[in-house]
Length: 268
Image (cartoon, rainbow, N blue to C red):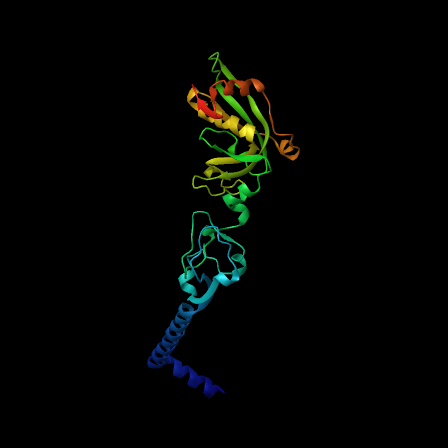
């Protein structure tokens, strides 16, 4: 045993032997590392793609989807890429977007039907119509104005007859149907993207819509339509949507003359 130990010590004490062993170990490490790196680069993942061109608002089915093997390393920085079919089927191509044939699917071009502007119009009650109000930069409480909540619409400006300042609630208890950005895409219902809001969409009766359209035309006379957010209990127990102050209604209508044939003419 002592002789064996002594022989091993002599073997490893030889500088040439140690050098050779070091070279062999280094080569093995490089070989194993190189092969591991190559295998990682060549490792593929099965990715869904569009078999044909898909246009705006198209609802995606399993028949629209094909699959291809793609090197996993190529996809590392594509966080927006959708890799699973169950996250695609049933989704729609976003309004004002399209997916070219043989293209991958990305989160920023897909939406649920409820997130599409067309869904808003499909949910307008009978005998009502959509009215869209632009959001201006100084509007307060915009973060509280999300779909499903109820607001009031106030009028502020100068009385056309007396030239005195007036302010009051024109329409009470209006449900917000949607909030749209400047491209008419639906803003996140949670309110997290509400800073991108450009328009508020709600439904009102034909009479109210006509009144609001006239009020909007009168903005050149320093009259402004102001949406006012209310608290949670107001939305939880909404009242009837009504014209609240008839004086304001009459003031707005006084700025118009109805001509024969039911044509409305603006007369400032």
